Amino acid sequence: MKSDESRLNNRLSLGFKLGIAVSLALVIIGLIILLSISGAKNIQPLVRLEQIPAAIVISVGILILLLTPIIQVIVAIVLFSKARNKLFIGISVAVFCFAAISLVIALI
Amino acid sequence: MTLLNELNFGLNLWALGGTGLVAGLLGSALGIGGGPIIVPMLTLALRLPIQVAIGSSLVAIVANACTATGMYTKARLTNVKLGLLLETATIPGAIIGGLAVAFIAPSILSALFGLVLLYVAYTMVVRRHLISEDGLSADNSFTPDNTPNSLSGSLANSYYDQNLGKVVTYKVTHMPAGLGAGFFAGVLSSLLGIGGGVIKVPVMHLVMGLPMKAAIATSAFMIAITTTVGALIYHYYGYIYPFIVAPLVIGVVIGARVGVELTQRAGGILLRRIFGVFLFLVALLMFLKTANLI
Image (cartoon, rainbow over all chains, first blue to last red; front, top):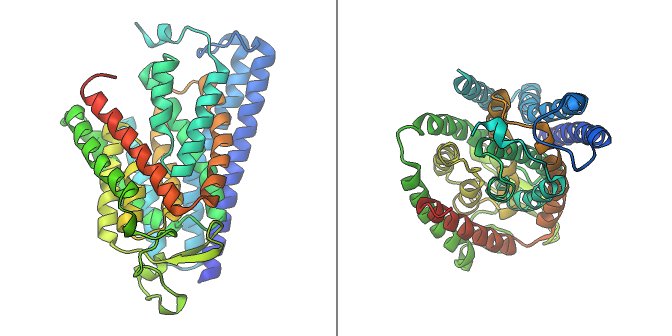
C-alpha cells in the first residue's frame, strides 16, 4: 500500500517537474528570440509581424504549462487503476469530469 | 477605449519578472497561488486592463502551483488523495460561483469575506494553544499500527519535517467540514476572483488536523488543478498575451522554488503567523474594495 503511495508521489512529482521544465525552456527560448529581434525596449503586448516566431514558441510553452495539471490527474487515474483502488479511481475520474464540465460551461 | 488601444504601450519586462518573483515566493511558501499579489500589481502599477491582468495572473498561478507541487510531492508534503477528494467539492463550487455572479452583489460578499478572513487571521496568529509546533493537536497524531482501515485511514499521511528533524504522521478529521469549505472556496474563488488558498489552508490546518506544511502543499496541488480550468478559458478568449506572461512565468518559477525551500525549513508556528498577517492584509483589501477606495 505504502509503495503505491510512494509511486504516486514520485510519478506526480516527476510529471509536474517535467511539465514545468519543458514549458519554462520554451518560454525562455521564445523570450531570447524576441529580445534578439526587437531589443528590450521595443516590446509591446500586441505581437508584431516579425515577432510571430517568438510568440508561437512562448504560446506553446504556456499551453504545455496549462495542460500539465490535467495530465497529472490522468496519471493519477492510471496509477490508482494499477493499484486497483476503486474509491480513488472514482474520485480522480470525477475531478477530471468536473474540470471538463466547467470548461465546457464556460465556453458555451 | 478598446482593449487593443489599452495595450498599445511598451512593456517593462523587469517589472513583470519582479512581480512574478515576489508572487512565486509568497504564493508557494503560503499555498495561496499568488493572485492577490499579481492582479493589483498588473492593474495598478503596470496599468494593464483587468481581463488581461486576471488571465496573466491565472497562468502565473498555474506555474507557481505546478513548481511548488513538483517539489512538495517529492518531499511527501502533499496529501494527493485528500487534494483530489476536496477537488470534487471545489470545482462544482467554482462552477456554481461562476453562474451566480449575476445574482450576488460582489461588494456585500467582499465585506462578509473580509470579516471571515479577520476571524481566521486572529485564530492563526493569536490562539497559540490550539496546535503545537508540528501542527498536530494531541489527539491527531497516529502510529501506522492503529490506522483505521477506512477513508480516514487511507487519507492518513506522514512526511519528514526538516525543521523538526523527525517524521510527522497525521490523520485527516472532519471530512464533511473540509468538503463544505472546499465547496465554499470554489464559490468564492469564482465570485471574487481569488485563489481558494486563503480558505483551504486554514480549514485543512485548523479543522481537518493537517500540519501547516501539509496544508500548504495540498492547497498548492489543488490550486494547480482548479486554476488551470480558468486559465484555459482566458486563453480561449484571447486574454493571455505571450509577451506579458513570459517574464511573469520565469519570475514565478524562480520565486516558487525559493518559497518551497523556505517552507520546508521554517517552523509551523512561524508559517502560521506569516499566513495570519497575510490574511489581515487580504481582509483589509477586501474592505477597501467594498468601499470603492481601490
